[in-house]
Image 1 (cartoon, rainbow over the protein chains, first blue to last red):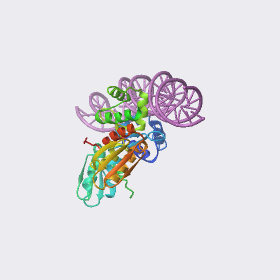
Image 2 (image 1 turned 45 degrees about the horizontal axis):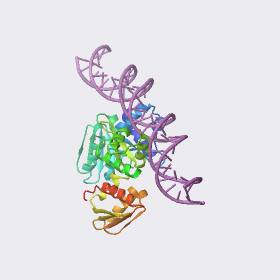
Image 3 (image 1 turned 135 degrees about the vertical axis):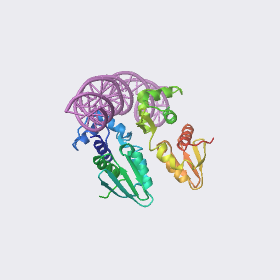
Image 4 (image 1 turned 90 degrees about the vertical axis):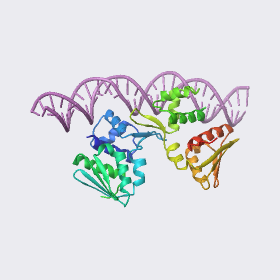
Length: 148
Length: 148
DNA sequence: AAAATGAATGAATATTTATACATAGTATAC
DNA sequence: GTATACTATGTATAAATATTCATTCATTTT
């Protein structure tokens, strides 16, 4: 399924140097995901990945929306991330929930039903349990979350 | 000449939405610069321009090195920029010269001979008077300098 | 000044990426 | 359930971009 594959793509380009759609297809293949170049092209567009020129050829990286800008400022604001049914609960340090929420909305807004932030807690509502699991994973990546 | 054309490219992509090499070639043509797609491709690579996907197609913008990251933090630190022969003098607010220098080195390091920063003044040395003029222009763009 | 060296560029071409169209899959309404 | 509508995907192809090779320009060396 799409969300799943795109999440995998984000992880892949973060870990290795992907220079072409073909390389990405191979990498996905190794994780058991089989797709064609056309699909990868669309994924890259939707994820707004960007190809940055460097010495040994251009490389794909996440741009604005996802990682870079957004997550950055609040990377160390998240204390815990957990899920229950179709909700994802993010615990932050005091006062940071709002910023984290804004970041999440910005990055994943179109994939969630909505979110509510208190002072140190953010609640994300998704359409289904499955999506909640995937969103959880995405949020973890977004904030570079190392915990369980 | 190259440096000149690339400077022009930076200005163009900042002002209008350039989606393909061809569009860039046209835009350059209107300014009296005539080149082929191959050259533009190389320029884009050297300038490390990046194509960002958006609703109405992808658009080229300057990435890391140039504008975005670098210039940003010090955009309001520059008070004046002037040139004399092969040197460019940048006056900054007290204590900011070092940061501005780092930014310049990072963005244009390979096009200048070197730079020396004091507390509120940065001196950039170039190989020739011509280059100094072009670098001056680039520094202006880098810091979004509005003055004379 | 001629020769030698290296950068810049263009023409032709290879490679990579995007898209039009058709089909399959999924959910929603009836 | 079947029909309807919408999304996702693949295939084939068009479009865009990168690169190889040859040539021209400018600079330095002899």
